Length: 290
Image 1 (cartoon, rainbow, N blue to C red):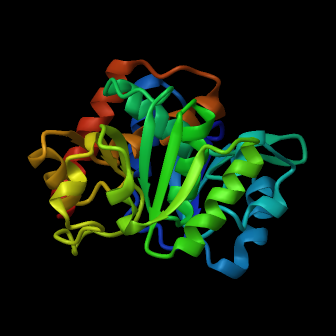
Image 2: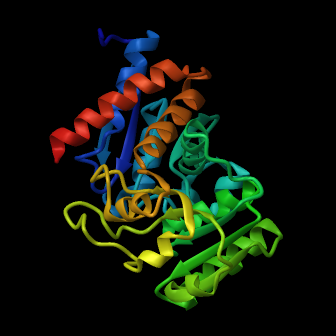
């Protein structure tokens, strides 16, 4: 592309950001869709979040993504916030509005859209969610928001799982999320569940680690999503597949959270064929990094 006085700048703030795949998503979208836009990562330390948001606004940055550890820290410095993002308590996309930015959470809509492309349904299903950290917390909100019948939240610390369950149930005005210790799966009815692995266990280079090692657990699963995308196939995914379940990694979630952000910034719709093209580029890039 040719950069000139009309080029819009978008970017990512986080710490670290050096290995992000987001520039592949957004710069490829801009090139293929003919938009005069460039996307850059910006390394921002924890104490500089307010300055970064205000500086981006002053510089007329046309859109921002936010990654760890700033997804909650940016909220006090926003002009507006989307209701779902407010309930989740985390923002990953900033869209310009008069006087600043409006915050959205496209992580969860991205996960939902990624699951839809694989034919995974949420509405009416019972789900097992592993972990009670920030990612799992957001997934719990999404599952309830999209009509899951019941969500069993399993975590090493039952106290932490209970805190997340209570928060989600209160915010969503329901009693759908049930906190359990990790071994709580032994008490679940013997049926098939949607399972989402929301912890960092199994993340490269510790790719042989797994939250639950008991093969009987995986007999409960018929479809699973690991939010990790590096390695492309985690031990969790292998165990699911060995038990006859379908298993997917988190790369499509990363793809679609970026696509939805791009759509918000540019008021466009990204066609499936282009999304598939970028997905292949991302898969190649993760192979190179490994």
